[in-house]
Image (cartoon, rainbow over all chains, first blue to last red; front, side):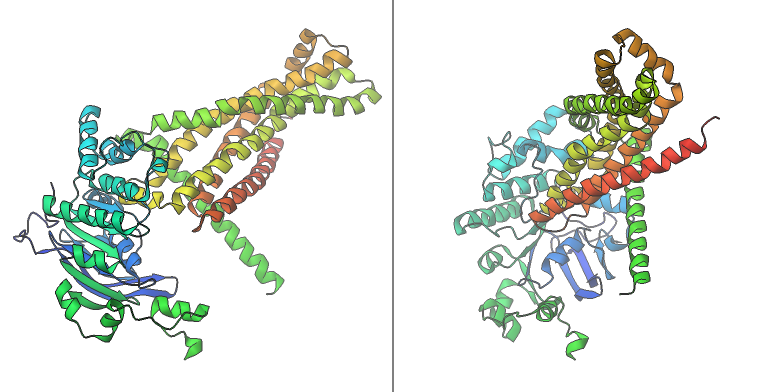
Length: 282
Length: 265
């Protein structure tokens, strides 16, 4: 079922056409604007990495793309429809075609690994238990967790939790997979294993992936396309090679890991988050 | 800030809180009682599991507390009734106090401590661990998945526990009656039955259903509004217990007043 997330009515469908198209997206927390009208396309079958430092708005962007935050303006086009303006029931239908791997895994602590992976299948399909059982084993095998079906999430290591979360995200054979900081909190060897898994999934299923991360090595390894987000604005959008060659000061600062002035107070912190200079400072 | 502004602000936030509780309860009730007719099954396994925790496992502590409360009631009533030479009224006093008031109230207090706090802690921990977000991204409605089974379990188990509490309270009073007031077990229970009308039990059961709704709504609402960080789960749990006790007593007052005003004279 993995493929392009494009309406069947549309002539496009080949690899490279946009699976997700974001136009002038704005998100506010209270009065503070976190994303200042960003626009980009995620081509079908490609891995788009959204890079950015802490407080750049990259996690907010991801949460908005999966419908956990409501935008204050702009649109998110998926399958020819504006995801942001959809009714909840329509959005749920679309969500069944998406998978999301959370930073901490977000596995249900009261269920075994197998039950976690089986949950979307039990809830959204009419499959019988033996078929679900086979599919769960298949998904766990894909992420290298065969034999861990009856483990509780608390018994797994950090990397295994992420793999189990990816297996759960794959359960419904999604067309788009979202990853929030897939290698955060993992040692380099385990993190490299997660990168390999993402590459393997891309090769095997040709699915569209959106990965939010601040890990440069991982980003350059897995990305077909990279977007650099700073203070709620896109400052660079291109292939890994284009970003590497970029002479833009803000891109260079991020890629060359040049430190910025330290945040010393609440106003500085809010300014870092939003990119706005508070009125009391103007 | 002027006092009037503080009172106004507190009133608005209080009303907003009650509004949120109502919305949550309405969503859970729709998932539990209307959606099954539209082909969306309620999660019976989870409901049974919750009923086991909320109801069956609370029986020992509810029994013990109700027995003691019944005994205390008999002792306190006897103190005054003895002076009036009306010690035989102990049975009726205990029975009416337990069925109309203390049975539902003591059961509610025990269930708040055991289950209201657990609802807030469970949902709060899930919120902190992004499990609630995960449910939403899997197109699973958290209210349908988490709150509806709890509401069903509470609506079934609270009246059962309350009835059980009434019985053990009467037995507690009976112990005093038999030991110190010249009753036999048979005459004590007969005096209890004679003192009560069906309405007394009905009032207690209606209260228990109202308390079940309040405890479920407050526990789950506090869980869903848990902030980030593990210490926030502790705060939510405390808030769930304190707010539930306050709202249960408030609803008790409201319903006792309604039943008083509508009582046949």
